[in-house]
Every structure is written in structure tokens, then in C-alpha cells.
Image 1 (cartoon, rainbow, N blue to C red):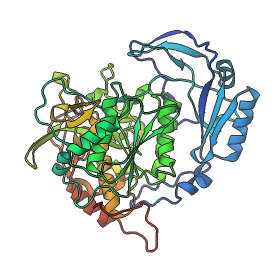
Image 2 (cartoon, one colour):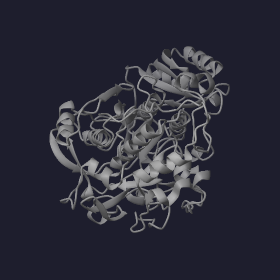
Image 3 (cartoon, rainbow, N blue to C red):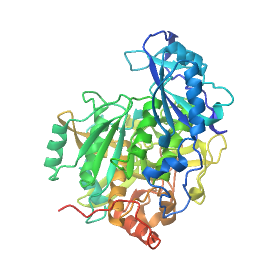
Image 4 (cartoon, rainbow, N blue to C red):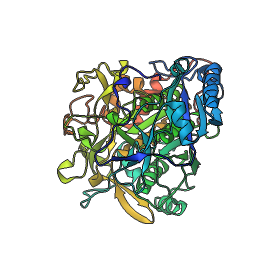
Length: 529
């Protein structure tokens, strides 16, 4: 199938430590797969800024959706093997097929197996080989998702093991980072991608009321591929952290929480559906889940990358947590690794700091690294899958351990240390949570407020941020995340640094010179009374 040379080096989902094969999958329960197809044309994602989407969501598919001929060929192949079509979204380039285990194995040349997975009570379904298709169809297919249902990501949040040194409400962090005045995200929608867990409306009401936020932010759960709002588990900490950070820092924005299964199929569908959602129209997507690049299959990476590329082309900003396990990203081979989807060049990768303040003034801010006490450290490093982008070429990004000139992670940073963490409410309990999971929604809220002030969606802001440089950031120059040390300017621990929100907005406004008569990409909106 259609993969890049870098991605072609990946194994087809390597097994993690503690996982083992149990035998063939022989269930009589049918499975549904998502076939991700190539685009008719290249998406309009220029490496310049300001960016304005060439086509709005309603028109995008006619230019960058799936080719009808590709859909027809795939339908013919599916029919040959008795697969049933359950849905088709040409604008998102997906075809949904359902069939028996035997029919799917024959149609895609795979052998499905049962696997015991670390931390899970039930076995999961997976396949060791990549799906195979006839030569006349294979070039048009990026991925077949849903044959392998192993978990692909983990939430990037940390609860403190020791008593925290100093904690903050999200609005206090926003004040320290000088979030722009007279903005609250009104007129915007922030999408949160969640691969498990859930939220309680009662908890949210209690939390926002205690902070004096009224009216309460609007939060909507969106079911994706069988996922749903299911509070009662450990992942609730992730869901509630994301909602409460965005809701208290951008209370005027609508929040849409896309719940999907923790599989490559679910993750892809959640991002794709959020990016293309014509009802809620998110201008920012926040993702606090991920896994090491090396743990992804080639086709899964390619599919996810295509969804993120769609988001960029549609003018949607995507903020992603960079990971909480330092430069190893939790891998045990002794080599540095970066987390995906943070490592995608279409993601604004968010690293972590340790933040100490006095009243409304930052006293110190250093790289988050509490690994000595098992309290985590910010992810960061160099991608071995994605080449160094043009907008990062002046940032002195080191080469990856294998010599590849790759994309540097992260781009930006914010408070993430659980020992200087965020005061949140989860499952009826007030508690403190940290991790880069907090930084992705922090930046999502900041961008939503910038969108509101500018009257348009800033979209993929990489070019703008790297052009603006140090003036809009607090440069973090102390600390390390293991293999990499902080330095003046961009570094593989905290990127460009933590934000000065008002200065950033002013710099974006100075760069944003709309063409006369051009419609704004964002919906704008005035601050709520």
C-alpha cells in the first residue's frame, strides 16, 4: 500500500514487553474496518503564513477527497470477498467495510490473532503482517484500519507521587503566561480527542462554579467508532484535565469531546471526523494521547499523518502532548525516541516545564525532569520518520541518533511538572495533575483566544511561531530531559519556550494582513458579557 520511504522501515506493530501471541482469532463476530484512500490531489497546505484555507469544509472533498474511481475499485474488491459496505465518506477518503473474520483475512491477505496485552484483562485482536491488496488497488489505499485492534496510545498525564511544591488553577497559569486580555475563546470550538475515560457533568459544574466561571462552558460528547463518554476509570483524569484546562482558560469556546476506541482505527477516525466536522466546526484540536514513533505500523502512521494534513489544510490548529517519559519516551533500548502524533510536522508539539511563581510573577521555569523521583520528564528529541521542515531549518535541530535530519520536538512548552501541577476535579475528588497532557489544552485555549481576537483561525502556526521567535516566548535555558539539554533559542526539551500570550497575539496580528475582500477563516466573536 501507499507508504513513504521513511515509514516503510517500520515493523507492522511490534509487540511491547509483556505481550504474547495466544493463537488464531476464530470468533464468529464480524469486524468493521476503515479503508483510508489517497487524495485526488495534493492538499493546499503552503509553508507560509498567514494561511487561509483554499476550500471550506463543505467544498474540500470535491478537490481533496477520494477519487470516485478508487472507491469503485475498492468496492469491487470488497464485493468479491463478501464484505458489506457500512458507510462511505468520500470527503474524508474513507470506506467502511464489515465482514466475517475469514472474509477479511482472505480479502486483505492477513491472519488475525489473539494477543495478551500488558494491563488489559481481555485479549486483543491483531495481525502481524500488513494488509495486502491487488496491484491495481494497492496504490490507492493508504491503510486498512481495524484489523489490528491493539492499543496504540497512552494518555500523557501524571499524578504526583510526592506532595506537590506549588500548584495552580488553570486561570492562574494563564495569568502567569499573560494570556491576551479581553478574550475568552467566544465564537470558537475546541475539539478534544479522547481514547478512553469520560466526564461527569456534575463534576464540571462544581469545578467551574468554584472558579467563578459563569455561564458554564458548553461541553458536548461525540461518539466515534463505538467510543463513548464512559467515566469510572483511570483515563478520566485525562478527559477531565483536558476539559477543565480548556474550559477555564477559554470559557467562551464550545468544547467537543470526541470519544474513540484506543486503536489506530479509532484514533484516525477521531482526528478525521473532528477536522471535517461541519456541524461543530472546531478551529483547534487538542490531543493528549500518543505512543513512540517506533511502536506504530507504517500504514497507521501514514493514515494518521493524512488526517493531520487534512486538518492543516482546513485551517485547524492541532496541539499535541510531547510525552511524559523524557527523551526515551518510555522505550527501553537506551536510544532517544519521540512521541507520535506530536512528531508530525502538522502537530504543534507541546513540551513541559517546572514552573515556580510568586503571586502573578514567574520566579523560575526550567525543563521538567523529575525522573530521579519517578515523577516523569518532558518528551522531546528528533523524529526518525519526518524530515526537518523548512520552518525549523534555522533552529539548530540536532540529527537523530541514526543520522537522519528529522523534525525537532517539541515546538512550544508550558507547565507540566506534577509537582507544580494543575488543580482539577476528577470523579468527585479535587486533585493535582501534571504532564504534557496539560500543555496541549493550555495551548489550544491560547490559540482559541487568538482566533477570537483576530477574527479568523490561525490554522497551522508553525511558520508564524518560528518567524516570531524569542520575542513571544519565555526561553527555557536550564535543565534536560535525559539525552538533550536546554539551550538559548529552540531546544529538544521545551522548543521555543513557554508563551507570552499577549505578545504572541500582537505578533500574529502584525503578521496577519488579510487580502482585501477575503472572507475570514475563523468565525470570530465578541467576548461574553
